[in-house]
Amino acid sequence: MDHDPVTEALVEGSLDFDARALGAFLGSRLGPDEGCYALTRIGGGQSNPTYFLDWAGHRLVLRKQPSGPILRGAHAIDREYRVLDALHPTDVPVPRPVLWHGDAGLLGTPFYLMERVEGRIFTDTALASLPRGERRAIWMAVADTLAALHRIRPDVVGLGDYGRPGSYFERQIARWDRQYRSSPSGPVPEIEALHDWLIAHMPPDDGLVALCHGDFRLGNLMFHPSEPRVVAILDWELSTLGHPLADLGFCVMPWHTSPDEYGGLLGHDVGAAGLPPKAEVVDRYMAGAPFAAPLLPFHEAFALYRFAVIFVGIADRARTGTASDPEAAALGPLARRFAIRAMELTKGTARSLTSKS
Image (cartoon, rainbow, N blue to C red; front, top):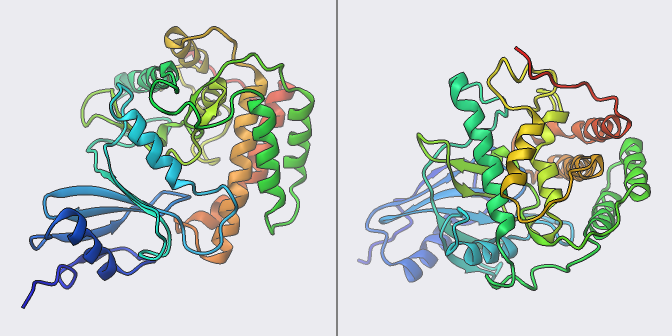
C-alpha cells in the first residue's frame, strides 16, 4: 500500500485548511515526505496566518490569506512573494522564496512557501531580554537595513511597475481612509481629525521613490542568532513603490508610543537602558540612504495614522473570529490611542524621551 504522507502529520495550533490536501500537493511538488510532515501555527501575526512547515528535509514557512471576507487590496500575499523573489539575489536580507500557489481551491485562499530562516525576533522595542550593552547595536542594524533596502533601484530588480511613482502620500492617505470607512465599526473621531490634519499639512511631492516595506518595524525583522545583524526582513504585505520617509516614520514609531501601546518606548529613560534616542537612529539611516531629505512630523504622524487604521481592521477581524492573533481583540482600542499620539506629535505636546542616565 502506498504511503499516505498525511496520516503521520504533526499539527500544532489551529488550521483553517485541510492538512491532507496540502500534504498531497507537497508530495507532488517537493517529493515524498519521508515520514516527516509537521505544521505549527505561528502566533503573533495580525494579518496573514503563518505556519512553520516541515516536509522531509525542507524547513519552510507557509503564508496564506485569512479565511472569510477581506477588504479589497488587503492581505496581498502575491505581492509579498513577488518582492521576495526580486530581492533574494540582492544584499537585502529576505527569506528564499520556494513556491507560489494562487489557486484558492486547495487551502481556501492563495498561499506561498518560503525558506525558514533561523534567528531572533524581538517584539520588545526596549530589548529587555538583551544585556544593556547589546541594545544600541540592534537598533543601528535596523537603521542600516532600512537604508540598504532604499538603496535598491526597483527597475533593476524587476519591480519598476510595483507601484505608481509620485503623489505617494496623497494616494496612501486616500487608500487608508477608504479602508477605514469600509469598516463596519463605528466612527473614531480622533482618526478622522488626524486624517484632516494630514491632508492639510501634506508636504509637496519631492520626487523621491523607493521600494518601501510598508510596515518596517523591529518585530518584522529577524536577527542573526548571536550577532546584531538582520538576516531577514519579514511581512511584505504592504510593500510598494513609495516614499522612503514613510518607512522611516514607521521605524521610529516606538519613540512616540508607550509600552502598553503596542510596546513603545515613550516614558523610558532610553540612555539608562542602553537604547539610542530617535535622532541617532534617524542619523544612522540618513548616513546610508541614497538621498538627503528631512524626516518631518508629517511622516511620523502618517505612520501612526496608518497603524491606527490597521488596528481598526484587526478589531473587525477579532469580532468575526478571523484574526490571526488570539489577543487581537485587546488591540482594537489602540486605533484611537495611536491617532491621539499622532496629534500630540503634530502639536508638539508629546512627552520627550530623555537620553540622559
